[in-house]
Length: 222
Image (cartoon, rainbow, N blue to C red; front, top):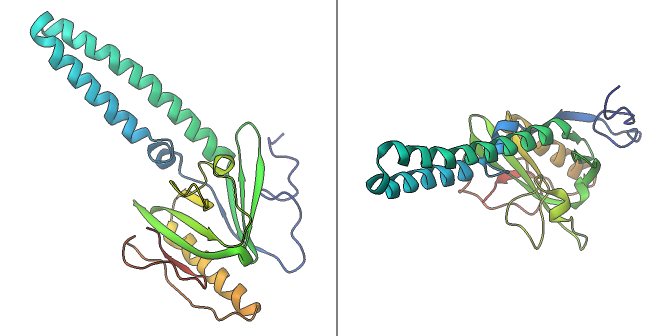
């Protein structure tokens, strides 16, 4: 039996209201999630530098073989740390389902304790896509209104370093440009239905040319 057998629709906490339809569903790439959200790359660099420092520092005093053994012990600790990060990232990606409908974005997240986070389009001021290389990218949503999402409850499905006003994010998405276009078109269609002037945009490839537009669509993330 599926771990999420209680879901009436995969990734959603309930049946869709009349008139709402699913446009896209997906999940993070766990390798990219491990490298970035779980800081796998900085951790690997940190232990690499420590190993080099330990080897150089010990070489003159105890010789090549002993210095190498000292460095390898540090490397073993680093491998264990990276293995833990890999398992956490894999479990996070496996338990995550991102859903875009014509009314909202839903994030089903959580490994031990699963929860669904609804981001209705009426609260989305703008959204930004940040390419990470290899077709993978993050899509962050800037939220309006007085209510705020919890950074700690959303992590790692949140834009980094936005503590005061957290931005729910679709992290490490394969084919991020395609997903960004789907979200941009859905936002524009929703705005038109609500009688709001919509601005059609195409997700940018770089992350440093345009600032988010307050009326919707997708623009590069900072």
